[in-house]
Image (cartoon, rainbow, N blue to C red):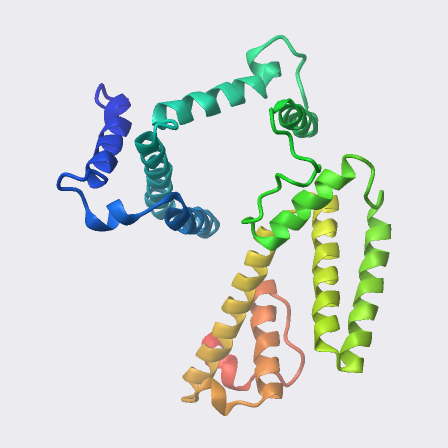
Length: 284
């Protein structure tokens, strides 16, 4: 670390203050509020996650900078209101990390990873209870702006802390089968409003499966999206190698190419007769 590095954050704070200055600042930045900036904060967090998933460290560096700017932006607006400033944000999170890691910064005995997760939730619960305006419900402070699947996991995790949860994964899987059957019944009845409700129940149970397995459902779905994109683009490339567009192929042909893409990824042999147009794209 060079002597100048500890002061880099001060430069960013000063840049943000200048952008928000009524005397020669940026007109766009001056028009912003907590409400208008919050969507950008969420977007930047997703872009960080995307860079991580792609393994692009240079892009990750840039996206983390964009996310840090969001923190500085909110802190500057709060400073203008006299609520708090960036130093207060840093102090608050530093105190919280020390408080929630007594096995590292205090005299508490060592904890396993699972033990730390449980203890972390216990401390959070105690902190919520100690607030002057504690939420009336255990679920009240689970943020509404979270992605729906993530919020579903957090809601079910909170409920599980007081025993309202399926204790074993087998019971959750049985509930999934039950909800899928109810969805099928509403689809067969042609009731799209009820089908939408039942589909929501199916997704909520899927979030519970993720909670039981310790899996992030948002990350899992992003992986499935990436896999679908990768395989569909394989179909497009295979057809393009034969001088054709995707809309010129019928479903059976595209399904065969999908299986070829899957086989190529898994290094499994293709069934007899599934060569053809995708051969050039596969290299043989």
